[in-house]
Picture (spheres, rainbow, N blue to C red):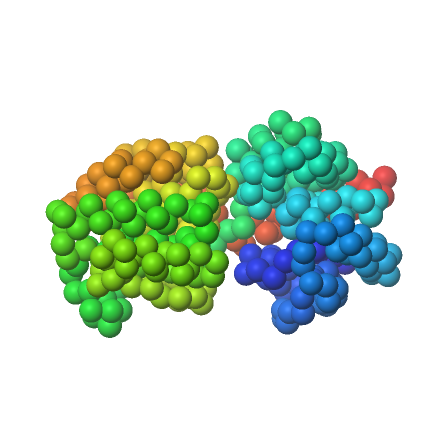
Length: 362
């Protein structure tokens, strides 16, 4: 197959496109900024991203021209917003769009134009993929057809994400046997890192040796660091900065609990990674999380932005660390093997691509 993707520079995009290139397909990626992904034919638009109509129409013109030149078997947009809008307007088929989260949960509700464009994409797409049934439900509620929607997980490399001994890295970090909380989410407001920090401050009243690792980076970092200082948590927080993907399992190995409490989300990779590494999880009360976590059975669920509930759950897990790890680990590891193996999900996607192409030929 010849597959043409449009998307932004992102680790998820890279993993998706490089998988299909490694399978022997001819893979093109149309992207705003130059990137170097192994085995991928890159078409950099050399456009400075902004929200003006001028940017949108320049991008539309360039992508339409490139698609005519490439003559792909499949055109696949990653995210409904902008990428999906433009691919829908090219008129090319088969056209696939993958939902990323905020593009279905938030953007369609910010204005009439955003809603209209989202509905246009859902109507014109030959296939809509998402990493949770809840996202599919949201797409159907906006006019997408359930028969043209599939849940496809981004998936994990289960050889990389697995339990490992943390003695060496705990010693390196100076944590010893201290209770450790991991926050693997970005510092943007959506992920409620501020709520977690305030809950952590309350945890320290009971467990003064507890530590927290923050692997977030980028936008919002200075505000988070300022809040850490304001709360007097400087000595208890370890900022990692950007962490290479291959190093994430090390920090998960150190953690006694991983916390992911955004206000809106699909199936978070951070949740799947913790499940695979057999780390107890606390997540926010969102429909997509309920597709993976049963409260008290294989994780703990707290109301969104409920600092008091989060504090209570953190104390419960940290005061009974081994009990919770033993209770959750086997079923969580089995769960990701059954549903979140990257190889299995991408093989399924390959079959779906072939089906779309064959259907178009008939």
